[in-house]
Length: 469
Ligand code: FAD
Image (cartoon, rainbow, N blue to C red; front, side, top):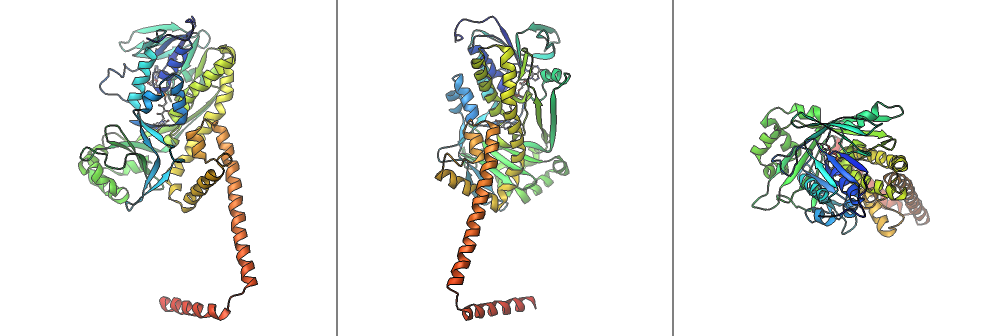
């Protein structure tokens, strides 16, 4: 068993929600020596046979890893992740091409959501000052007294009082509901027109059906499919598509026809029968983006993770941002000597602009991933950015690199991205203008023999006329 750093303080911190962020946060507060009570609606997922939940696997990157490192969990988790060094773009004809995520050696990791959640709960439990309460659904709570009422799985009620309540109860947070009743609380929620559906690609002869160290993408402009590798050599394919389009497909044959048209290379890999069956197993699931502010009430309650900022999943940052919330809160705790009345407002002040920035970036990537990657200009600009980053690693840093491989504050990354974009586009314009002027100058200085140009031009013209008649 682990002991908390220093003597156990008597203050009680209630973490509501034992998902990814709640379980990690319990470790953070336990490490500081608080009495931690975690409450989770679901039964203990380590005992449950079927774990209901969202995506099967997730992309873990630098911010998430740093947060895990702080509680000694980085190695345990990354050793069970699969590195993805680049995107593998699948064209409609089945041609594959790669776009690296960053420099050589930089990668994101595909990790299993259920396993990550289980390991974090187990880690939280190793602190003697932590208590995990499963089958406890928060029903009501008071921001004045910190008194919470939970309903147990058997219908009975449980009440506890805490000095600090940490709302980590996800996008549909019951804790946040109290915030919305208070004045000067800003809140916005947007459902995007797309839904998502997960399909499994099994191994072939015991091996991955596609190259494993890539995040596979089939961008088709208005919709797309992605696939992430799992340790059991399967891939989880996620189809993102407008709900209207999901609903248009009503029979197994229509599924096959649709896949034949847009993702033909995946049909033999997923399997015809599995495809016809699995498409109808669950309907397309919704995706929501939620922004709010402030993240705290007085010195009693603070929101973190999806409860504070649900983002659409196209930057692979939802969990990473939620994990980073834990580090930022911890840093502010150090700064203000664990005085909740100073820590909570400061946390809101520093964190809101960053979480809002990643929510906006995720929305932006919603278009970039399915449409821009098909554009020649976009790919050209990616190469230019990467080349300039190689030449001037401290001056030009691609946006994706700042977001995924550094802890640059999200809103600073956005500001820098806009600045770099302006500078690079101006540079390209100057270079193009310079090239045109240079060529013109050379042509004027050394005019070519006009007769040599007239003859081919005449030939070309007669061909055009012949073709048109
Ligand atoms: P949750 O994981 O939602 O956990 C909340 C917990 O609170 C749950 O266990 C719930 O049972 C519990 N709870 C709810 N209400 C109550 C209550 N009243 N009382 C007690 N307990 C309660 N992020 C990434 O970083 N990388 C990715 O690649 C990525 N891919 C994604 C793909 C998809 C399709 C989706 C939908 C999301 C993806 N995300 C990704 C985002 C990521 O899943 C979330 O950001 C992350 O799960 C947030 O964790 P959380 O703990 O805040 O919330």
